[in-house]
Image (tube, rainbow, N blue to C red; front, side, top):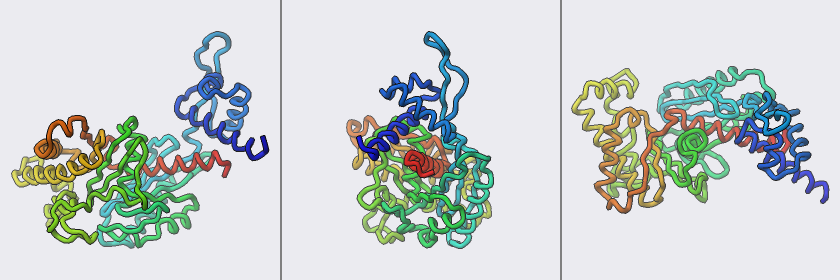
Length: 387
């Protein structure tokens, strides 16, 4: 075996061992040898290397199966930190996590839908606040992940954001210049699907669709347990499928788009037109006193969501649909209306096995998903010895 082959095998063995420590910690060297099939000398050598690089550490002795109690190993989740950012049309969420995705800090700000300069300034400010909270660690800030509501291609370039021109902000360049770490870019709904897969209730799901409903509507599609992005990376733009072929013109250039009828903006924006309170607070105040108009609005919201979801169910046949919207999460009447709409428009036999769930991560689904992608990128670079 030549030197290059030997180096590759060592990298593969190290990656295998670290994966098993992350997945099965606390774990002994002997158990690692058993699980991986690697001999004890190889395991001992690679574990020593990982210990020297502070990516794992030894804990107290474990249970003995006869003989001396083994020293247990754990992944050092505090070896570095990741920042995940969700830039919405009217909000910004920035999270700081450790290398296992545990939330350390969270910062949020309401944004003006038209003010791009203020959005850019808030992005740098809140990211800086998160970075300033990073505790001392061997690797510090390992990267920053940013998701946006729009088209992100396979080169991770923001192509177009129809409801707000976020694509005019040079996100990667601005953040790299300011913070000097790798910057990852992704679509907001894709990031939400990753977040639910990694940290939410979609961990065991092979075929699922994450539906993000905000100013617009986007899908994150999991096929065979992996994110499906399409040929150019533009999959999941279901908010721009027509549900009324001669409906009003959308900013995307199409007519009668689903999000013109079922997005939060389309359904609730008029409630906040003459109110200084945030939209959700206005909706909550009316809903809490069972305002008849708001109850009808909830029913209409659920109906139009259900129309689009039925198309998705019939097209993709997922096991589970995961909904992410603060208002939907708060009012079961909307979920009931969604289910009623789907059931009334399809034969029971055709949709008997699907599940409709509310996002377990809520508002942080997409930002945590970006943090997860940053962590994965860091570990890949670590295994390729780029540190």
